[in-house]
Length: 352
Ligand SMILES: NC(=O)c1ccc[n+]([C@@H]2O[C@H](COP(=O)([O-])OP(=O)(O)OC[C@H]3O[C@@H](n4cnc5c(N)ncnc54)[C@H](O)[C@@H]3O)[C@@H](O)[C@H]2O)c1
Image (tube, rainbow, N blue to C red; front, side):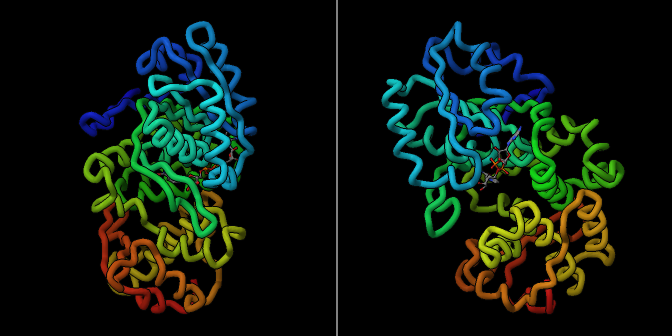
């Protein structure tokens, strides 16, 4: 299936199809002809899919690959210079194409390289992790990390095409499947009760996988609409941050070591809904429904940590504006809203 992200001159198609990686020549041909192609990937993903893609393209394009170590450290600002230098050594010009082949780390980094190298080169996203397929490859947020924090240098730069092959999830480690499921569950909570029910009904990832292309399509479509309404993140896009205020605080407190992002978001979603429920902002039983679904997909929902330990981090949340903290709450499963409060909101609960 194919959908278009309608952003005027920045519009682009997203193709979601099992096996689409074997159709790269035709797909890439839609956005680039007679040019050089550079594939940027990491050392986990490239051996599985890199040569398969290169083989299809190399009779028609001059193809080179840059393979980086896997992991968040690769998204560091310090890695930009060697990549720019390699692109220059390969004589990549503004009419050439860069492909991001990998998870969110490769997608964000490559997108930033594409946005900045020679003031912008076209790029295609081929996301291979669940998180990248349902979230990071769509919407044009590209970034690198600084020593003082994640995603501190970046841009809004849309890809020319996103190719999603759900079959790449076959080689993705369980740990990262769970991580991506945190975001999938998030979409159900904030925008789509039917998706939430579908996840409940499947009850685990092995069962859900039978319908994974449909699940990805539903998530991407939710993100598409939100991005179309708020390309530059001044309004509705904040809803995608459900569970993230507490998640960022937990990640910072534990120095990004104890919980993965998806796990931290899972805890954040349950805890914020529990607080919302206490204040009568959503029906009783909503938090329990989220807790149950998190458990069934192997995600945590609590840490036992004292909430006041997290207050200093909450005060520095990026969405903390003019001393007010913007949090996302759900009024029922499938419907969300932004609530302006402050860090005191969280201390209603002793632990998290
Ligand atoms: N741009 C956005 O809108 C946005 C949104 C959410 C997250 N992000 C960013 O995404 C990043 C996290 O993304 P991620 O979870 O995909 O991490 P990741 O890119 O590190 O991928 C997770 C791991 O899985 C491996 N991998 C990926 N696909 C594979 C496959 N098909 N087979 C085998 N191994 C595979 C990778 O090598 C890596 O070790 C973070 O940097 C985060 O800031 C960006």
